[in-house]
Every structure is written in C-alpha cells, then in structure tokens.
Image (cartoon, rainbow, N blue to C red; front, side, top):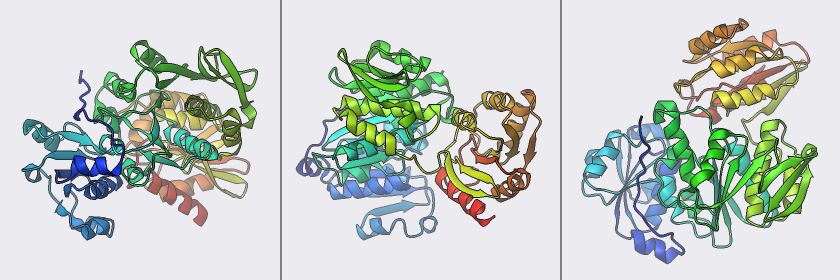
Length: 473
C-alpha cells in the first residue's frame, strides 16, 4: 500500500506585508504548473520579492493572453519543457495541485534537498486573517459558497478560495486582518501541506475517488484527515456523523470535535430534531431554522447546510445570520443547476458531478421521470454503486453514455440488470438524443459521474457547453 507523503518545511504564519517581503526577498523560486493557481502564486511571490521562474509542459502559445500579467513582471519563463533543468540554483519549488507528489521534478527536488511546497500551503502562510476550510469527496463547493454567504451576511469581507477555482494565492494578495477566508481543499492540495491551519475545518464525506492518483482508499482517507493536522486544542474539527470514515477520524484529533447529522442527535455540533436545525455547544442549544426553510434542495444539501452551520457557529456567527443565509442561498453553478424548460422538459446541469457518489445524490434528487447523460474521464473507480442506484430507481428511464468510460458504465449497468442505455460520440449528440426521447413533465439530467479531461478543459467548461447546447435546441 502506498503511504501518504507530505512535503513542506515547518514555517510560521505571515502576519504583515513586511514579514512577507522579508521572508521571500531574493529567494529563487521555481513554480511548476501555469493554471490559475500557478499564475496567482507567481504574482504573490513576485510581490513578496522572490526571484520567480515559471514552468509548464505546455508551450507558450497554448496559454493565449493568460500569462501576459507575468510577462509584465519580467519573470523567467521555462515553457514547453519538463522543468527538470530549471531546478538548478533554486531555493524552493512550488507545485500546482495538478502536479503529483511522485512527479519526476518533485523527486529530483527531494534529491537536491530543495524544499517543495504546494501552492495552497505557500499561500496560507501569507493569510493575515481568520481562515476556515473544508474537504470531502462531495459537497465542497456548495458548502464553501454557502459559508461565504454566511460570513458576508455577518458583515465580513470574505474570500472563498482554493479548489473552487479562485486560488488561495489570489486571496492572499487582497485579504486584510479583519477579513475572513474560506478554503475549499482537495486531496491533491492536502498532499503538500504541513502548516496549513484553519481555525475550524471539516471533512464532509469520504467516498471512492481519485484512486488513479492516490492508489488506495486508505491513502485518500488519510489525506482528507490531514486537514486537521496543524490544529490546536482551541480549534474545531467538524465531522459527518453518518460517514464511518469521517467519524473514525475523531479518535486522535487534537482539536475540539463537532459533528453534523441529519439523522441523529450529536453530542456537539449541528443536527436535525423535529424538522428543525439545532446547534449544540457546551451544553447549550439554539434553534437555527426549520429544515424546509433551507433553500438548496435535496438531503445532501441539508447535510451541506448542517456542516456550514457548524463551521459558522463555531466561529461565533449568530443563529439569525445563519438562518437568513440558509433561507436565501440558491446554490452554485454546475451543481443540479436548472438550465431551461423546453416543451415541458426541464434540463439540469450537474457537470460538477465528477464522481459516482455525487451523481448518486443527483439521481436521488430527481422527482419526475428522467433521462440522463453519463460518462467522461477514467479515474479508475467502480461504477457498480451508481449502476445499482439507477437500476433500482424507476424514475431513471434512460442513460446516454459518452466519453472514455462509456463502455465501463455500460458493463456496470448491464451487471445491475439495467438495459435502457445508448451511446453518443459527442455531448452535442447526447443532448439531442435526450431531447428526442424526453416527454413533457420529465427531466434531462447531465451528471457525468466522471471528470471532464477526456473531452473538456474542466467541469466548468463542460457545464457551460452543455447549457449552450440546451439553449440552442
């Protein structure tokens, strides 16, 4: 079994601009991976006085104008190469989340005794204000977005950053001492943390995902738990009481453990009793709101609301503020997002359904007959649980399969005794097929259960294209 490996050097948190400059002034830093986080990291470290070299395996013309801001700074570019030679004479290597910890450049840096930091770990050391964070297989983006709404409702300038698509490095360049930062954290980012210290942190759930990178569920689960490692006794760890893997994390944590549950009362945390969300801490209880007041639909979103309640309340946000946010927060783009109604058929964009558990939750949210689109990039996970859920859900009338996992999903559906599926070569063809077979009063659900990289840049591009295709019908 592969053991989790964590990179980084022990380091204090930055508290002021002067500390940032003093710490990094003149340091020679190589940044690998020029997606959004890499570009923001380069800007942050240049501002802090580092001598920055940026590297990416893609050639310069693949970036369009995205790197113009770095060109204006006069940074050194090493594009269209693997970056191994660029390590010479560097003091630090910063890697983007897309760079695995067993990449050749990381292995070479280790041999050269060059410290390796992930972008999030590096950026967190610049954050001057309170920071909360959460991870989990599903529900991260909805929950951090809801938390952002709660803290803004409480009067805070709040930056929602990290895996959500707005780099923590970008937030670090703007945040002030009195602000709040909410961080969505992926397992990829947790591979490279050492001092990352959210005052309240949560693991929402742990189900099979990203095994093509992490190898085993033990490694993947260990990485999720790693979000708590830098916490102290006065900090809060928030865990899903209904998830066995999460609940077992409580055994050896240093921080104050809270739970959230929609099915059971918990010793401390957020739970449901008699149709009401209750917050309990230190023997005191507060009613937050009725469960039917939570605007975002579905039992999974009630769990997300409970997790957000526990984190916000642990930071002292009043119940009335949380209540208002739960009543008014409408959800996030690409997550069970209503797109259009045409000829009595509702089209739903769930492009953020990038794993089987997420798509199972989308399936469970369907209340009328539904045809759905499945398939995408292969992350080496089993589709059997999803196929079994579809097979036992009469409302799922037909599945259109796309992408490199189409044959695997077909096999799983067949094994589950479900025979109502077709294949499409493109998303456009799949949308047209669903349009042709859907009847008034039904749904068309796009919830791929896979990543997007076989056909699209990311799930956001995939979702936008789905919506464009639907609106062209």
